[in-house]
Image (cartoon, rainbow, N blue to C red; front, side, top):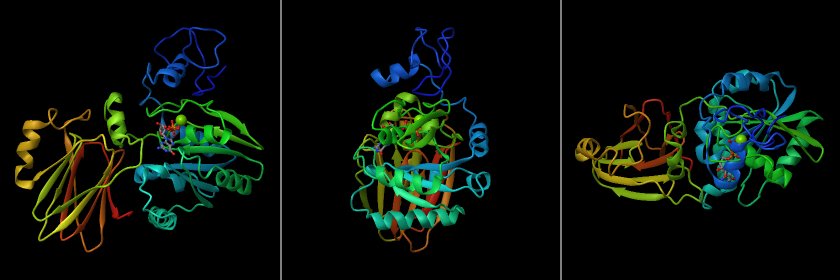
Length: 348
Ligand SMILES: Nc1nc2c(ncn2[C@@H]2O[C@H](COP(=O)(O)OP(=O)(O)O)[C@@H](O)[C@H]2O)c(=O)[nH]1
Ligand SMILES: [Mg+2]
C-alpha cells in the first residue's frame, strides 16, 4: 500500500522514515497528514531521492512527458541532460506560477522568452501552456494538449522539486489528494491518477542540489519563496553599488554614469544596498546578524559578467533575479558555493 499523498510505501515500524503511519488502515502517511493539516515537516526528504533514478524511471515509461517549470524559477527548471535523456519523446511544457510574475508582462512576451530560452538550451517541445494555480487558469489548455499528444498513453508529470507538479495535478483533478508543499522532497514515489480519460503520473522532483532552496534551513523557505505576485524593487544608481539579499547573495554592480537595478525576489527577503567600497566590511560584520537568512555554507562562489547594451538578468536558482540596465559594464554575483547563477537577456 502506498500513501496517496506522496507515493511512499506505508509502514508502521520506523517513525523517522518515509511512509510511516501509526494506523494500519491509513491512506496517508503521518508526514503527509502533518504537512497537509499543520504545514509541519516531520521527516525532511530534501536529499535522499536520487535524480538519476527518477529520470531513469521516467525514460523507461512509455508515456507522454508533461514537463513542469516554475516561471519564477525558470533557469533552475532546466534539467541538465533533459533533451538527451528524453530524446525523441513528445514533451508538453507547462509553465506554472504565472501569478507570481507582474501583470505587466504580457502573455506574448512570456511565450517569446520561453521559446528563446528553450532554443538556447537545445530543447524542443510540442506545446507550451501557462498555468496559475491560484487563479486556476490554463487547466483546460493542459487537458487539451495532453489529449492531443498522448494517443492514449499515460502522461508523466516531471520537473524540479517545488515546480508545482502536485499542485497542478490536484487542480486538474479538482480535489487535493496529492500532498503539495514548499518543502523540496514532498513527493516520494510515482503515483497514478486518472483524470477524466487520461492517466497522469505524479513523480518525485528532480533535484540536483544547485538551487538555493536546497541550501537554506526549511524554516527559511517561507522567507525566500514568494507566495504572491512579486513587486519589482527598483534602484536608480550613479556609482558602484553592492546589494545583499539577506545573507544569501551579494550583487556588485560597477556603474560609470547611471544605471538601474531591479530586483525580483520575495517581498519577505531583506534587500540591503550599500556602496561597493563598504560591502566587504558589511559582510564581515553583519553576516548572520543584519544579513539573514544565511545558507548552509558560508563559503561563497562568485560569478562575473561583462555586459553590453542589452538589459541583463542575473538569476540565482531558487531565489529570483536582479535585472541590470544602463551604464553598468560589470556585474558580479556571490552565492553559497553550490548555488547556480545564470546571466540571461532580461525576461522583462
Ligand atoms: N503562487 C503559486 N504557487 C504555486 C503554484 N503552483 C504551486 N505553487 C506552490 O509551490 C509549492 C510547491 O508545489 P508542489 O505542487 O508541492 O510542487 P512539486 O514539488 O513540483 O510537486 C507549494 O507551496 C505550492 O503552493 C502557482 O501556480 N502559483
Ligand atoms: Mg510533488
